[in-house]
Figure (cartoon, helix red, strand yellow):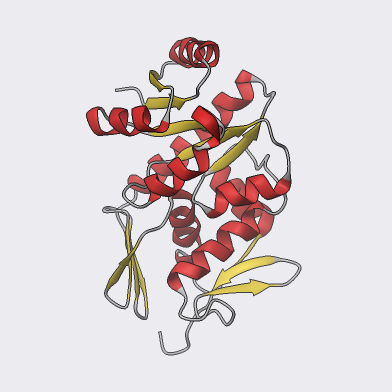
Length: 230
């Protein structure tokens, strides 16, 4: 069965354009004009990815994303006519998986959607659970537990942690991580990876300023710290 995409945009013309184009690409597409409509749609039908205009219905897109992340980890790609780096960082900090600035090419949008869905599909097809000290990651259930407490991660945070945990002690360069996370190559802002790492540390580290798990190798990238006792 094809993936289902929810397009959230206050402009009828944009909704119709994206619905027609994405349907031609083989996706099942439903639309919503506002946040309340979007939540109703999510409750009533399966949704594999959300395409969200952050200015939808009076600029409440960020609030919608914040509310969504309290109960669901559905992948979200934000669309905005604001190119400021601060806007992208805000969206990523709230749990977005990607940020696309208008105007954009529809082919680029499809590539971004495909990259996110492939990443999620790749992880879900792997069966191995990973563990380090009091941190556990289960690819089957898409759950992360720290000190017996379930931690809510966004899809991209989960993918990042799974990659690093799969090879403790190995240093992954920024380019290697970016390529893995996006499949088709990273086309976002340079700061994006750092934002995701920071968000992940805030959720799994007791002291994000002195990380126990995710170590920065300056000028190179990151690694999952390998304990001598493990």
